[in-house]
Length: 110
Image 1 (cartoon, rainbow, N blue to C red):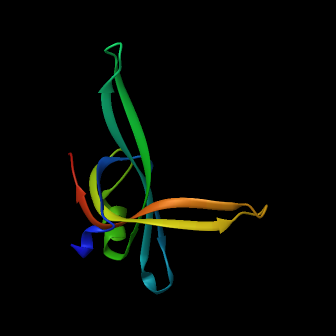
Image 2 (image 1 turned 120 degrees about the vertical axis):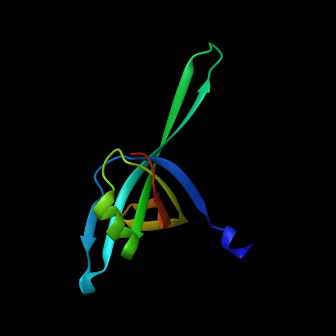
C-alpha cells in the first residue's frame, strides 16, 4: 500500500514536441506536456470540454523511448509521481511548478 501514496495515472495527447537533453555520462532527460480532456454538459445541454495541461519529466530509458517514438499529438498513458519545485526568479519572487515524473509509459493510438 505504501507505493500508492504518490501515484498518478493519465491518458492524453502530447501537446508539443518533447524536449530531449543528453546529460553528462549520456543519461537522457525528456520534458513534455500532456493534455487531458474531460467533457460534461452544462445547464443548457451544451457539451463543454475542459482541457488540463500537465508537465511531464522522464529520465533514462523512458526518455530514450520518448525520443524515438513520441511526438506532438501522440496519445500516451503514463504512470508516475507528483513532484513540486520552487525557486526565486531574477526579481527575487518565489516561483512554483508541479511536474509528474514518469515511471511507466504506454504508447496508444496508431
